[in-house]
Length: 344
Image 1: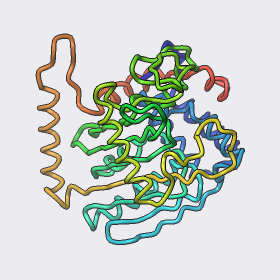
Image 2 (image 1 turned 90 degrees about the vertical axis):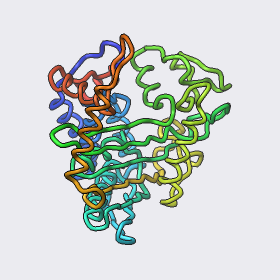
Image 3 (image 1 turned 90 degrees about the horizontal axis):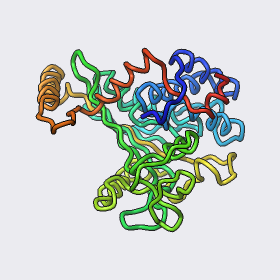
């Protein structure tokens, strides 16, 4: 969701500027197109913390050597429904979209396909990849673990990353059902965005180095898990699910062992991030036609459910699609730091 009254720019202009910046930084055409696609997905749908504001960071990592400018992806089919993608230390978006393609191809025969990704880097909004699966007619799931910045429930130190879980499913004649959530209260990129915009955070989402809750984004040392002060064990447990799929199944890096995405000084060493994509073909279960009818009926029922006074009932993805329609007409908000970097 946009913060404050940021200046807005046409999405096509932003796409051109982002691609040009990555190209100038030396990224290969396939990898920069994937990164641009993923960042524009986020900026289009109101996920500004993972949108085009990350362009400057990626360009710095390309220049510093953390990211391979010309990665050569390697796909290893392990079984009828499983594969691994070696990202060759390039932009994570490139490998993640490739994993979706591989998963869809395998699932056409096997019904279900799990694709792990190793030797990767930050992939942006996980929902971009779940959505890519749904747009191809499949049920999609995508996740990643990230560097430690979220306290455990009742904890006073960083343990898990923000570790998103994203799911999407096709709906006949409609935009896909889409759920993309961090297992932390908010993403750390949200804190950085609030710092850039000079806006306080909501209460109960972040803490200082002593584990005390704060709203000043400049005082934040760690995030709190999804669920808040009373139910944070739910978010902490779900963060572990992301680590299970993304790090343990792929043999990559645990949350606490990552080189930090931001800060730390080292922008030359590879981070060896792991991600995981799961693709399911409804045609190999209830059948695509009946699945589509049931998705339609389910969403009609959900959206028609009674709402509390002054509130609205929405299906997962409804807010994002509404925001996308608005931004396609009015442009996307861009923070001052990104306006400067892209020369807008």
